[in-house]
Length: 69
Image (cartoon, rainbow, N blue to C red; front, side):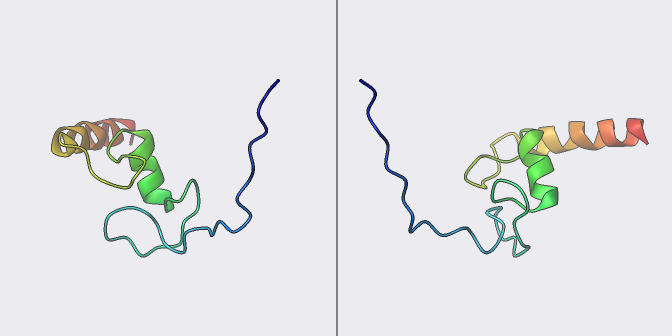
């Protein structure tokens, strides 16, 4: 038999983006639009922190954006 999981009905949605120092309204998964893109590209963790190799990932992301434009 499967165990039934209870849902916490008292959970509160975040009022600002979970990205470090961001005060924008969250749009998707607790991130603002810009930080959600960073999250998809691997430049931000689920907790809103930057990874140790952030600079390398940012340079590669900017190169891809420039090439696409």
